[in-house]
Amino acid sequence: MTDIKVDLAGIKLKNPVITASGTFGFGREYAKFYDLSKLGGIVVKGLTLEPREGNKPPRIAETSAGILNSVGLQNPGVKYFLDKELPFLRQYDTAVIANIAGNTVEEYCKMTESLGSRVDGIELNISCPNVKEGGVAFGIKCESVYNITRSVKEYCKVPLIVKLSPNVTDIREIALAAQEAGADALSLINTLLGMAIDIKTRKPVLANTVGGLSGPAVKPVALRMVWQVAQAVNIPVIGMGGISNWEDAVEFILAGADAVSIGTANFLNPYAPLEVAEGIKEYLIKNKFDNIHELKGNIKY
Image (cartoon, rainbow, N blue to C red):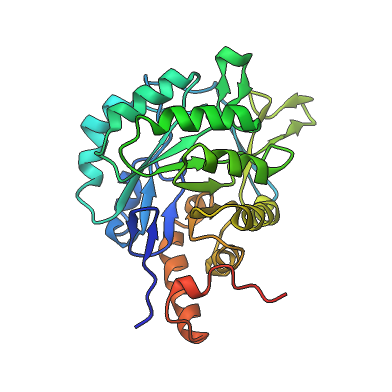
């Protein structure tokens, strides 16, 4: 029997496929299509300490190979999630991971404390601007990555996953800083910064001018960064960025990812995570791998 279960720093996944934050809401829409228990895990929509309306529209723009988004973390806040959304998700036999975002270290710590052990893991979004440091993103300097990871870790009762920004000079240095500060796992990549211009109006398409690029366009960059980080650290890595099908997912596992996360593909095909999980299993069987761990990092140079 081919085994596709994954132990992600203590988070038990029945298969290596997780849904990416910001693309799956709180699961209600997708539960109309299939049983969410078939997923390895769900990373919920990014949460902030207080409810947030997000940015002004337009805040989504389609590109030739993906989408730009500047939604601005619209969400109902961590308390609403715990009271209203988490009970719904707990009906299903799948890991629930909370993605948290904030503008200060204190906000991150308060959310982590509130979540306690009611979720299976916490994913730390460090692409947010640190208002106390002039609005520079937490995730682009080793020192700030170390400091926020270490601070949040003190309050974290479940495995802590640090989500890395690709908008850096050397992703390996950032990954090592997070690991040294106590991260239990890493996820990457978050979106790449991009923009689009309407040549008819000569105005930016997005009201916020710039936004995060996701989808197939970012896959080669994401794959390279996952490969680099997997060689540099000794904690689990979740690979994401442009994964549209099982073949893409197998590439990320070969690059060293322990699990994969499906994001933008959900918008095009709500069944994508299930198809990816099934495709990975069939690939393992066809190539005579007993379990997914034998595939991880198994590149032939």
